[in-house]
Image 1: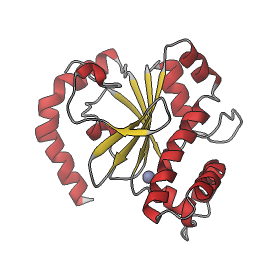
Image 2: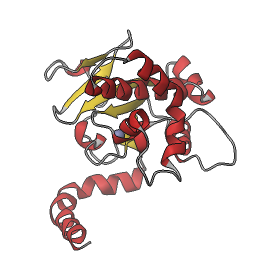
Image 3: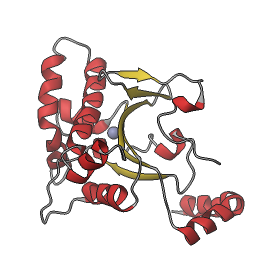
Length: 221
Ligand SMILES: [Zn+2]
């Protein structure tokens, strides 16, 4: 904890001192992020860092394996769905990005078996992806473990995008052109982002290019 407190003091001395105006404006005017990101809880995948975003720009939901459950408005505690509802219906974000990533432990557990100590919640949560896992295992027979792992990570993104469209107010916003859905995959060792294209494949984003090719972000800073 001492380390955390020390880091907080550094934040106060450096970041807060520099960004104070931004925070004060955000406090006064409220937040109006244009982008909602569903990412994994993995400590190596920080959407704010990857998209060079500052506070106020990204509404971020993180969970195990960046999964979106299907629309299920019942009495269960739906943390991810609640965040989606707030982001889409209240904040009215214009872009929604599902961000998968390399070396995802959730996907590994799904493909290779749940590690001990995950019985209470993780196993049930990953049950969202049971069918997707079967598809990947079938398609990836005979390929290397690494290739199968990556195929699994990409399939999680496609599955989450598919499940997003089961939420009536997301489908409605997409069909009305008010909301665009995107899929991405971040390569931890390479630091590269790939985006899902119209054909359903992941293609690396070039390191340079005109700003208007950016799928989202790019707000004035
Ligand atoms: Zn992960």
